[in-house]
Length: 187
Image 1 (cartoon, rainbow, N blue to C red):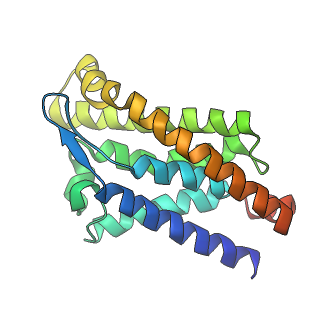
Image 2: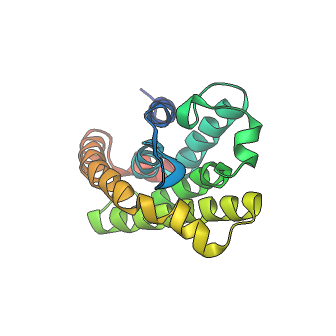
Image 3: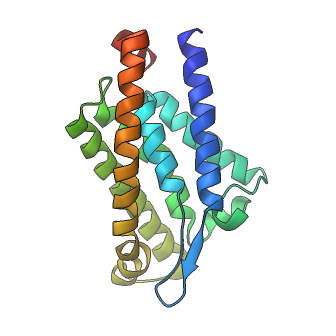
């Protein structure tokens, strides 16, 4: 299979996994109105498994599918209104976060580089989420952190712990089968 086809298929798979992760959502009343989902796991996988351009495009595709009306956002929501609402900042941050994870992980995805990428990626998502909450609701920075970041730190660390071995094994398989050159040339 040609290199571009492999990345296209993988990007489609990661996009679909992000959508499935959005449907796996729940809220904890009195804890946060922001839903807990597995979407960030999809962002982690996109950045860890794909070259930067492909990681970015997989998340752009995900966001566009939701804007076009497919129920792929948290709790099956969809539409441009979600991107313009209080939780839209998280979604806006997915493409740049996936791109940064991929860029920082590099073509060989050494564990320390991948860990750094996941950390920077989640910080970008948190920043986007906080900005979205503050801009759309007029909330203070403190409120945005307490509502949109603090409740999710442990949850997102657990998703990173799940993503790391998946990415490491998939990368090792890809390097063994196709070599690092195919990844580097696709960036």
